[in-house]
Length: 377
Ligand SMILES: *Cc1c(COP(=O)(O)O)cnc(C)c1O
Image (cartoon, rainbow, N blue to C red; front, side):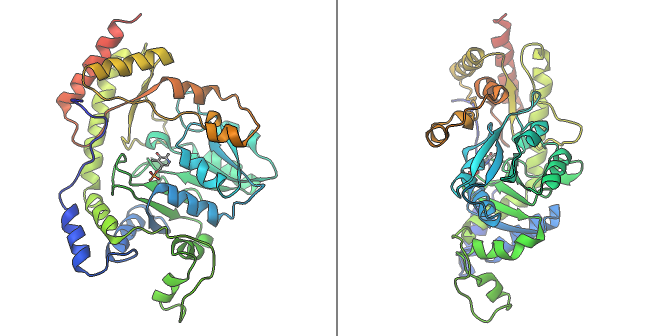
């Protein structure tokens, strides 16, 4: 492919910081670079407490453990999301209740959540699709009224805001990803943001294999041992060192991605009678995680992907409705009608988006998409 869908961006300092971590003589987790990254996030976004993890999936699993999700609990999750948003809760025994997407955006339809709540509902997992905020006031209202926890899957939502509040800082817990396809990366990597203070101490224990090791190193207890459930959720210092090099360049990364996004948006606006461009609601900011368009049919979407592929441009579709996934259908008898989720499954296409994408390449992509549509009715 002449233009790949993604190309991981290296700032240049990653290997230097990894060498620094090695020369410090401690490359297991929770060392100098882990603390630097966590401080960066807490300081910049006001998260009460952050813990780096080896993935967003791990952070979601920590969330499910912290909320004591168990057999018989129900957790509301959008169907149009990545597997992990549901899986982390399903593997704790929860029954997943799927919500549909908004008409104007692939994110959860906030106004349908209330009708999905039962006496067994324990949590709502919202996903800020493409880094665009869900309407959190509606979600928090419903959650408060029904005494339900809110988890923000903010995997795509670094440096994005809802009415001025950083995404991931609004629900009880927020989860982030630093997978190489996200805005800032460490290969595999993630983070749990703990906003509800009552979860902080236990989160540290779950993070460190069910031990109170963190409290021991802070001098709060005189020996440490097995006190709770947990796993080894923390990344090694080499991963944190890589991530820190990225964080030092977060502003530059964001600026360039937003510039790319705007070029796409302006260039493709002439097609707005034929394709749907992304919308940024008044309450949300755009962190340019993704540039997607929505075609009119599955056939049209697939033809566009194929057309671009023939021109050396790698575009991709995205999620497959989870309520129709083989794993869900094998383990559940409920069937759902979630037409909007299915529509995005069939018709959404993501265009190349990465830091080093050149303006001339975006221009080429725009021209090809326009040419494709000129030849269709
Ligand atoms: C990328 C992503 C994940 C998974 O992140 P990992 O770090 O790969 O585990 C989960 N949820 C959403 C919405 C994502 O985009």
